[in-house]
Image 1 (cartoon, rainbow, N blue to C red):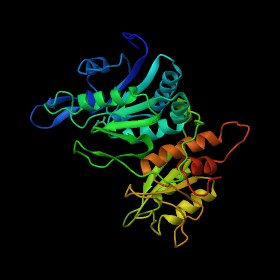
Image 2: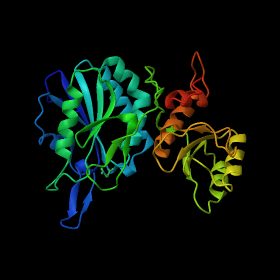
Image 3: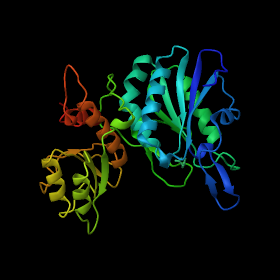
Length: 329
Ligand code: SIN
């Protein structure tokens, strides 16, 4: 970490993404994400707060790994506990920003609220050397928001001039610069003050996403079950309905101890309750989480349920609390 600042300061953690990207083929729209160091990106920012920076990675976020998430979680916790850090900004690729926001909400959100600090993700849709680059504006807005002393502590993203609560963050367009919006959270969603444990590098539960679609076939589920997958998130059709050819394989997976969560491939709207046709009655619904976010939540719930605790909970109990299901246990 470069410690070029006086205290108190904002910690800016660089992880890569288009915000740190450079064009490869001028005029053709081609570029490579994760090329410019965070220390260089910060030279374009006029901040009223002292800044310190840390380069955690410089990747295209489509390559984000679970061990890197663990490392990020550890660094964010350290930053939150550091009295000289007033807020944290994370530059990140936009493609998986919502997964990182979900992870941070469940492993650091409580600490952020307890310390009264903000953790703010930001990124860009255009590379750093594009004439209309949106990165400097987003980074500047994120730093400004992270440094504000107000009651809005917790996990956030700032994109396109909008602060969006981390768990509500959705990338809703593949190319527009105004690609992000905030999905409504359930009324009974509880911002817990106890963070879940961060899985060590090699202890992340194996969870996959299976999409239901026209002509869906069950072989992938059987394959995954036979190879030791611990959880499956269903990206169901509509309100998380499931093809008749997939349901029996998923039922068998649950009977064998596998965890199943029902989300929707639509990626918007609340998934709750059970299906009218009775399929997958023992699966939990994903609430407002889209499949990618539900996958992270299920991994954390499965890991937490294996940790010793004075009040042990099942993965279903953890998941129901995290997502704010009415069957809060
Ligand atoms: C990435 O997610 O790293 C590339 C795309 C982006 O940041 O917009």
